[in-house]
Length: 74
Image (tube, rainbow, N blue to C red; front, side):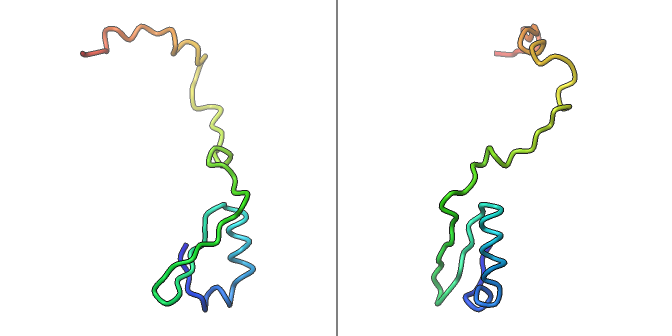
């Protein structure tokens, strides 16, 4: 997200909380240049993944042992 220095001044605590919660850096534009506020301990992208336990119907091991030879084209 990009904000101006004036917007930062008005909403500094809200914007800093958003950076801490989401891990998304905040960019501040001042005099045509940009600064970034980044969380030092940003969560990993993998930590933000949402689990989909019902996505594969059946046993995932069956996918490993399927015969795909008639579908494969060199």
